[in-house]
Length: 313
Image (cartoon, rainbow, N blue to C red; front, side, top):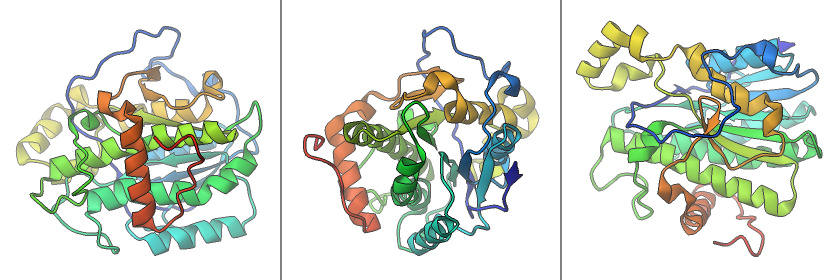
């Protein structure tokens, strides 16, 4: 069991959010009562957790390591998710280790930062939270496919937020250059992650790959990402955070559940909250929009769109 030195200059970010629809699917665990002992041991399995040096990412990595996983935390097998070249260098270094990859947790992010750009000129929320993980996942897909097997799939777990429910995706202005709003930019990046996950799962299923992709919502979690939000929100967080916010440990549970739960073997394309399948925003199920975002993302990150025929829309 080992937790490697960190990766991700960005930390994990979650959002304040509207009321989400609740699932009525029975038989799942509540995150506040879940125990690691309920999950099977994970010997000889390897995971990458982005943003694993703090908050939810750190707790996710810690719990996976306690289950016996070899966990690579993204920051010092260095990867700057705001830099496409850094992501490519990280993937190259990881593949040189010649080890498998069974779980990829796309967790890192920034939240409601002032308007600024990544090293590649992308608006930071969209470039780091979404495009960085889009590229990282695509570059690691061959390793994930080779590591998975029938009955023991590799898993991609992507952390979104209930903030996606108020997000809007502007395919003509993904950079928010028209009028910038930190909250809108953050919400758009989290919406994009849901669309990406659903599209990825459709492509994986069409190819018969032993890899699944699910998206998780950790809830409202007490992390230092709130340093950029409105001062009144920060005041409420300081005064009532213990009552209104989950701890990072509690926020990590759904990611851990998606990474290891036996009942999710071979199951993908789910939006999970408190270890339950929940409906995401209606527009996220629009397959044409999923495909359009995927195609634009391939163009922006400089990778080939490998979508097979019949999965074009």
